[in-house]
Image (cartoon, rainbow, N blue to C red; front, side, top):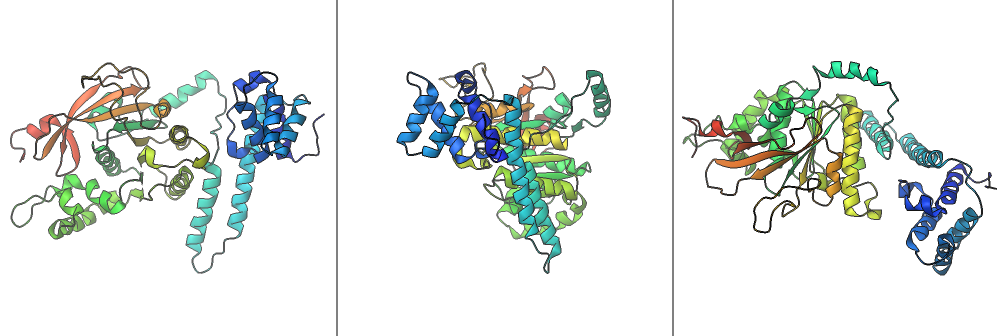
Amino acid sequence: MPNTREPAELRYQMELLRWLVDEEVLGSYPDVPEQALHPDIREAVNALQKVSGEGPRFVQAVELLTREGKHRAAELLNRAASEYPTVPLDDTLEAIRCTKRLRDIQEAVAEVLQLRPGKDPVTAVAAAEGILAAALAVGGDLVVPVRRAPEYLDDILLECSDAYVPSGIPLVDETFGGWRRASLHIVLGLTGTGKTSLILQSAMRAARSGLQVHIVSGEMRGADLLPRLLGDRLVQYVDEVGAPITVERVVRRDREAVRVLEAEVERSRPELSRITVDDRCWQTVTEMLAAIRYRNITSRIHVLFVDYLQLIRAHRAESKPREQQVREIAETLKRLAMELEVPVVVTAQLVDPPAWGGQDGAEVRRTGAPAVRESRAAAHAADLVVELQKGEEQEPGRYVGYALRVLKSRFSARDSAGAIMVFDRWSCRFIRAEEAWRPGALAY
């Protein structure tokens, strides 16, 4: 019989081990976060998965653990094999997840209790909220109550007027109505194709519509994002010799251009104040979620941008292959979109060369999921995937030809829609091709 005197945490993990001795259950090993398992239990599970010789698997696993000097793990596995599970597998898994989650929350509370207001209680409160938000974010599955089908009609009626956030991108706005709330959108592209410029253009469009925007920038400093947010207004100015004020001039800290930026920031302060930026490089998903939740507590977020997927680290990443990390980060962002009921727009690096390119460079029909670098499975979590592609022939000058096409959409059957756009190098803005080449447009 199971030892009821064991700590609750180990008791349920032993129950899992009793289930996994059954090779059919092991063959479809359930999704249990490794960090939720006691080290000895984890060693026993790894041993069961590793062996593949003749005879009972658990016997081989016990022998392997004994040879490796992991006697406690061998003892637990041997004991589990002699006992029958008494708790249903699903209940066992849920108990393990909840026990781990409770421990994380308790540790966070203990850490908060160590904080002292001192001379800066505002910072202390922010730190406390961040610690608690991080604890609540790690491993927390979104709990959705079961509802009868007709009850969803109320959601549909409510969303009719408030389902989308304007993207400022013609293809997205005209085809889908904008970025959809509670949905994950991925903007794919090779390095240097303007993905950051596209989402910053979209962020400024949302802020000008009165929406609260949060940007996670893993690649670019906030000081370099600012001129790109205001690019369309900067190019309305010229300097004393008639040369245009461009984003590039501000980025390289041209004095005249910076003075124009200063004036434009004051003019646009109400809109810019709706945008917050987290520009910490190579942060963990836990750190990112904590900052997002704190921002949402202080002022509700209406749209979230992340630049870019491969620059976010998974929680306790050292124990997981990179492909699994990227997939889990995408899935976490999807859950966050549903939880906060906001659009989440993420840029991601495309596999290079694209998986659908022919050997001679000719395009062939795509098969399978959109090719996100380091994790092809990441796109499965997305509701909308678009690809930004630079034209093959690029000429010097103000405008650059681009194509934006839809690779995947859960919103409609138009998963092959596309549009030709032009990138304005001066303002770092994507515009319609006809706007660039209309009579009177500056094209030098």
